[in-house]
Length: 412
Image (cartoon, rainbow, N blue to C red; front, side, top):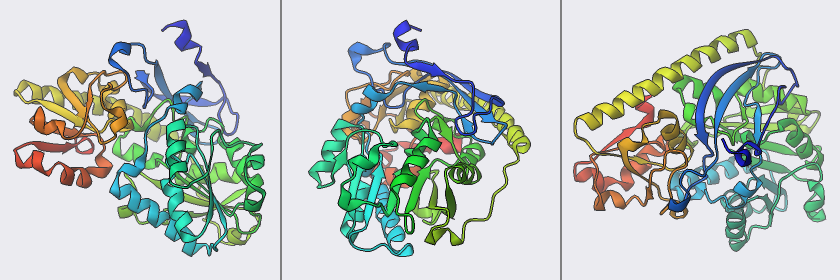
């Protein structure tokens, strides 16, 4: 490890939520890259690589990493946008409609999104009549949002962010953050900052994260990442929100069939506010049971990785040519963890900004999906299995020609 890389990492000894030093490591994934650190050909081998170690806090039950990375430059050029998927667009529209109707929002109410990407989610709230504002690090994504009429503050949301919100938009009725809360190294600090700008009577905090219970059930080790310092179940989400002055009032209010693959959706309201009168009943956290489950999960991940390697080796031994679908987090982390990336010809992805680059860590070329017709393979492992049906429809010509699609989830 070069000194320059090592300087990016800051390790800690205490829990991010309760400051306890009673933590138990239950999984290590060595030599893992950043999810979106896509590499140009001339830069192969220079990307950030560091082990991912996952801990359970025996004090409060929170699952987390205990290292932080300086990611500011990395996020400045962040290119990933979920809006490319029609399924995700439908989810965003549904999310906005349910929140608007269920919690009686009114034209002119303010909706802020933390990690607003290209403005896709906020555009649906705007259509319903909301005043909207995004907070987004990425320069290219912030520019795309502005082009569609979504105002963006281009830095992190923190304790001083009230000054970035126009006076006429305060107090804020809804703060939304989807698949961003688990990127936050200081979850309590964020929640406390959100509480300062929310409407004390009607304010809502809507959070979407990957569901830790589902990660464990489905052995989704590919969702552990340097960019994700925290991992949450409904119970631990309730715990951390309560420590910041919120009541958990709703869980998974959008049907599972309409949510993205592994999605925990929660709504919080400030304690004592209008919407906190009927909170979700307290969900106990038994850390001893959690510890046993986490240790067993760590062992199961080792077995899953061995099984995945055997699956790939058997296919190659039979003379089959393989490719992957999905250069997002699941694909990048699976390829890095399994260590058999040389068994794949390439990876395809719809995101044009990835094309011509290589997956970090595993160094596979990233191509457009159409490449499967020009440089055919026998079988594609779909890393983005949450969108399997959508992908199968897009690749109908590939399968009509005899190509096979296999979901990573089925292998795991």
